[in-house]
Amino acid sequence: MFKLLDQSIDYVEQHLHLPIEVDDIAKAAMSSKYHFQRMFHAVTGVTVTQYVRNRRLTLAAQELAGTSCKVIDVALKYGYDSPAAFTKAFHRMHGVTPLEARKMNVKLKAFPRISFQIQVRGETEMNYRMVEEKGSIVFGKSIILHEDAYKEIPVFVEKIWKDGTHNQILELLERPDGTLLYGYHYDFAEDGSKRYLMGAEAPEGIQIPDGFTVLHIPDQTYAVFDSRGTMTDDVEIDLSIMNVWKRIYTEWFPSTSFEQVEGPFIEKYYWIDDKHQDFISEVWIPVRKIAVDVKPF
Image 1 (cartoon, rainbow, N blue to C red):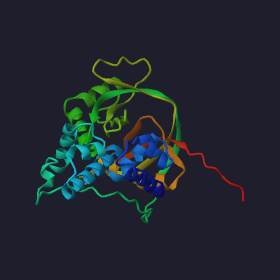
Image 2: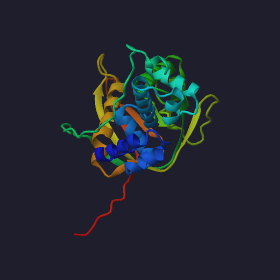
Image 3: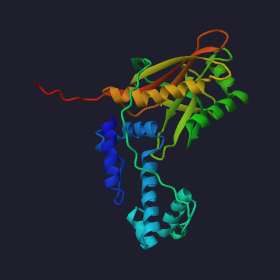
Image 4: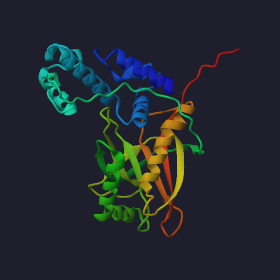
């Protein structure tokens, strides 16, 4: 998998001064667009489009600082239709305008080419299972996540706990107070944003009040990963689930013949004991088997 990711970076680097489509980058990695985008973001921490933009603006700054080329020429070379759009993007990244980048002692940022290296991992086993799940309808409260889901989700969850939304959902489900809801990631965009819903499957015949988001989930095959933890001052659910996500993309996917398919990702949480200290967290990822040509000897 890392070799294929390197191939995608080779393609990007060779086409930074040309129009680049995410579809073509994914093809260079012999992957579907959907799977490639999720994999790339999980492994690198940036989206594909962010990486392309950062590399173009890095090279643009080097040309402006080291040559006498015109700003308009550099802007057009790296995919910007106008000097105004280029200047805005350039300033957002470097903190200075393209013209100021020509001056001495001006600090500029550089985003190096990404390279992927195989590291020895797997010192701790990963628990997973494959599940064929029937489609369902879920409801709950949702938000749009823009930058760092690991920071935005805990703030959102705390908000719906405090304003009573969490307990309102539990009442509609006729579940005890303190029962944990599930998290659903969906509507992934190329800029890295996505929607996140905190809720649960809607029982048949339930009347869902206005103000809640309804999400339809299709029949799907999932790879399900789980981990256990203890709720203390130092260990929280969001930290546990974050570690699971990281290991899925850096260890499991690169060593299997599965890839993601479109559909909501689900996070499920369960208390193990009545004291609400020990818990299980699960990550459900929609997947399919990659067709592999087996050549006879």
